[in-house]
Length: 237
Image (cartoon, rainbow, N blue to C red; front, top):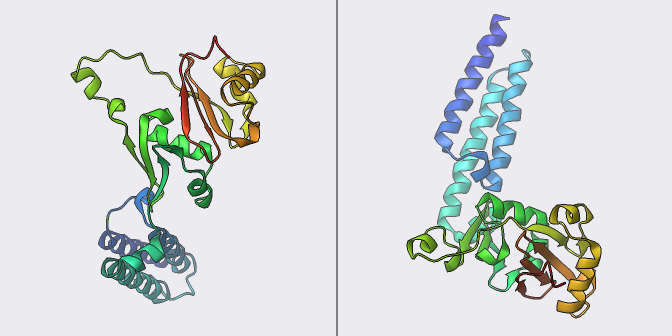
């Protein structure tokens, strides 16, 4: 029993030291190769802890090897931007002034819901607040807001604006989200009438995204099209 405890303490201290040496990035900030390395190290470290028949060195040596590999990959990434792009990827613009870049979104294997969740995490609840959104190589989304969406300038300049409202997603990648209709206090007839009136009767499957807030502002974008904003639509569609 004492042997197992000592082995656990030794391996724990060694792995802790190596992680401290590797850097202080959180899991959500890791590059793909760093996350893979971390998972493998964690798995290797548990083998000599649980198996007394396995020499401690058989767990320590592979861990040290992987840490050296980490430093080698990091060094090569700094030395060559092309190599860095090869192992970590590159940032991708997923929202531009025209709206959502659907091709980039599909290439990243993301859904509209994933994008909206990332936007909300940055404090932006509506597409018309965003100038650019960039998917970083570590999986985080960076947002550049439009000038009028700045949380400071409106108040500082004394500009009166309407109270913001959280939009509800009604259509996502050509699918009507029926469970959200009640939340948004609209029905399918409202959706059909709006599409007929404002989108020339566009087929549902051609609509990338459509949201509405409590003020009746609708934001809609066709696949391959630009984002359009329609104000005060609750009593018009």
